[in-house]
Image (cartoon, rainbow, N blue to C red; front, side, top):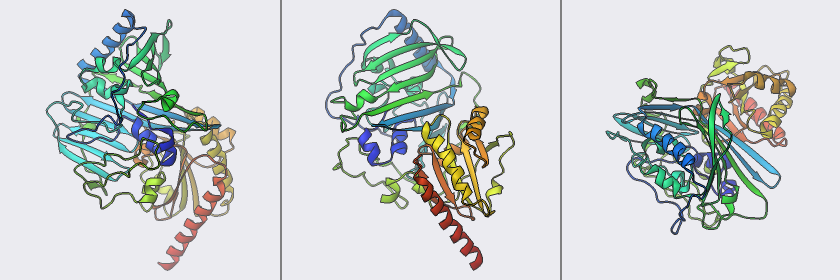
Length: 470
């Protein structure tokens, strides 16, 4: 796990860029890796406060991962970023499935890494590109190299995939720890009693690891990277100090399965449609320096479908002109959602989560106001998709409190969120009657209401004209 410079995030794409570097799929490449992403010799930690108890908990945990025959989690990443009085929260699904020696599926946001034992494939939905090469006989980190500059264990952040297939894991992590302690009382996560180990990295990030006391598995990780944004010599800072800036991350990995049966179907490699096969990805997708004069990203090896300037500058624009992905989930009564209900209609599909802060709450009510503009037009449909499928009662209560009357789908195991490659919450997709995405918007600003109404009207008018023409 790693993170972007706050100024760079604001300048490029808040949620997409930040999550892009936070998730375990990061920017990977086959055969070869990237540099550390910052100049100078990184500081070495001394791990003040290390005790035999902490050492025992950590070494036991790492041994479980290193010896595991198989591993599977169903993680979720929540990123809360503040600038002054404004805060935005992004929530994304993420998962790792692994079976020794060389079966792997890593999914995080709009990117994935898959190895079926014969082929190793890396897909970056955002760039509409993928790489493909032979799987090694045994997977190691040099085969699946992360492109998040300065991230992972080398910056002191826990990283499950490195736990599983990395080398010198404890030594590399400990070298970046400045101060460490363990809570006197255990905490409960997903019904499991957990040791809580808190530490500060040499780059001044504050981290809390929740480790299952019985199984020695990492179930949760909380990161406060605020101080790191201003730390001289850190890979991401210092930043503009004109406003108070904060970055907080919660990484929930549960449910976690260890040494369980993992069907080979989970590792199937399927060449993605409408993507370009490249020999390697761009090595610098986003500037991390915060310097507006930073060099532009390098051209990919093959670039017929590379993002244009507007698509790189705004989240979700890569979807414009493409067919709406399948929406997979159940409604609030538990019945499977029928995507055909949107066929032939102009639709607003928006994603939100109870965990994504006030922006989603604003969006729920704002979309309800937008629906009133089209009450008497059966050719316009509205659909909300909640990424929080495991708490239907929470979703129902929020919708009831906001007097939302439009249909809502509970995302099925994050499949729809992954298909859309969500770059932040809430996100809105305006779809024409032929099922093609025409506009994408992001955020919870109430002033977006007029823009949403206008884009729906434009799309609906264009769709009506197209039907008359044909």
